Image 1 (tube, rainbow, N blue to C red):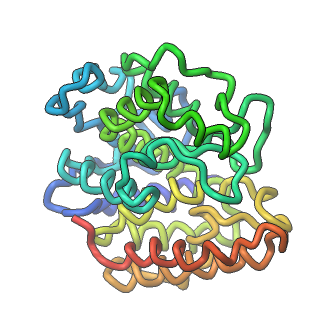
Image 2 (spheres, rainbow, N blue to C red):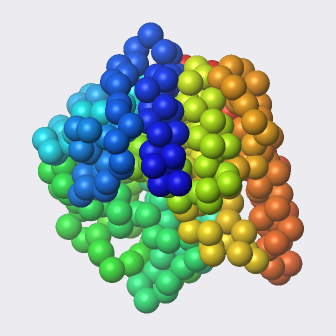
Amino acid sequence: MKKRAALLFAGFASVGLSACSPATQSVRGASTASISQHSTGYSDSSEPIFVMHNPAAQNASYGSHYASQNVSRPSNYAHGGMPELSPVELRVIGDQIFKNEGGGDIDKLVHWNDGEDFASMGIGHFTWYPVGRSGRFGSTFPELLSYMQERGVRIPAWLPRNGAPWHSKGQMMVAKHTPQVQELKDFLYQTRMLQAQFIVDRTRRAMPKLIMTTPDHLRSHVARNLNAVANTPGGWYALIDYTNFKGEGLNRSGGYNGQNWGLLQVLEEMRPSRPGQQALHEFADAAIRVLDRRVRNSPPARNERRWMAGWSSRVNTYRHMLV
């Protein structure tokens, strides 16, 4: 079945993946050889590969010393079959993710949602748990900081690396108007494009794993649905945003009652689809069902039903082409 999975994925890669406006995409072919993992992703010349080059540099028009930082991708990234997003597409997707997470409000670049035990940072509200606190959802803000440093970005010197310096929303709100937090908000505003690229690259890395970690009897179903969404104009926004929103879903023992709610679970839940507008509707419908299942499985004390209306509104943005 490993060989069959590689063949399925190679077929998926070779069809051609439309991001937002298909005329701007660069698609490269892939063979049916087996997939092996390298430090930079799946990147052997004989493999089906997904690589999205970084088309964006920091916007230098904001008057901040952060705006001119070197954000180029390390040169050891391989060429492959994932389409390239134009700078315009990357900016539009990044702006929409910022709107989805924080309403586009600069003040919410450093945030702490009610009912959560972690801070939410940047345009993607990347999770940042306090020092010494482990969390169910993982801590993605430290991953973003490492990603930035690898690209030559200077991080604010005071920023701790072992966890958020606040242990509660109340503590963070007291610190909200200090010079340090103002500097952090400025830093996160000036690096919006790089944060968007981080989210895109996270999705890129997940693509092969979505197929290879799926049980044998579901692999062809997941591959076809992934292919259907990816080859529909606007589909890459849905894949990218949901990965940032609820994760890849690769850990099958995660979630509540052993049921996760990531991108993989949505692709499994989708009805069989073909490329076209209906694939976006099927993806959005499946995402809402998966999120509703999460709410039903969640501890009653968390009252997660209160978030369902906002989650549904976000998912409904996947139904139409963004760019």
